[in-house]
Length: 291
Image 1: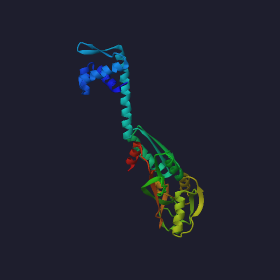
Image 2: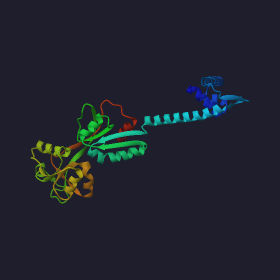
Image 3: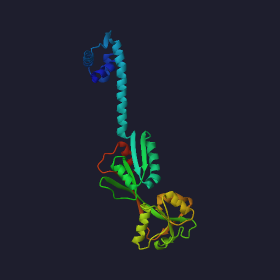
Image 4: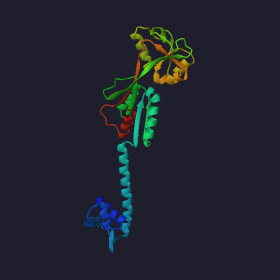
């Protein structure tokens, strides 16, 4: 069936006259009549009959007009949907992140994004660095937010968003709380260490090695940020953490920062995408929002 001719017929049916349809479509009346006649021949059915100066739909014409209305209404819905997809107003954004950005940056960003694009679905997965990169490479995520790294696989393009300060923190009653001390002195204190492979642990060891300050005193190893901070809050040892992780506790007075000479370490947070990829409009909207 010729959909162009069907649209002309439907417009005539809606207007109740060929003249009205021709005016709406901005084409000549004979052109409209010729197309409808051709449609009637193609389907071997009469759709319109003359009635005075107007037209009358046959029973077949009435039913076909109803079906055409459904068809063109669906077409409008499809066009509207595609327009929304192109604008990123609907769709899905799959985000993968390491612990720090997932817990201390993404909640604020997602809240803002959903206010701007309420119909866009957002899916977040939190995992370690290597698994996050694998998800991006394997097209299981669209955007990655990676903490602690600035160099990535050739398949991944990373852009540094910002660098967070690394801090030494202790219980408020610790002798070094809010004091200026040397790195050599602080490493003698028992540490609440994070698990092997964590960014904070590796950077602390590297910092001590760089300045020949000796090895940090391993007091206890804890697998988990909250557990580590709680241990320090209860009065045991020192821990080394990213400012985003401990600022809230410091502001509440639960723990205190130690000002340590030579301890200028930053925790980089990077936005990662696949090197050769065209992001969806929804993913682009998310990135543009945080810039």
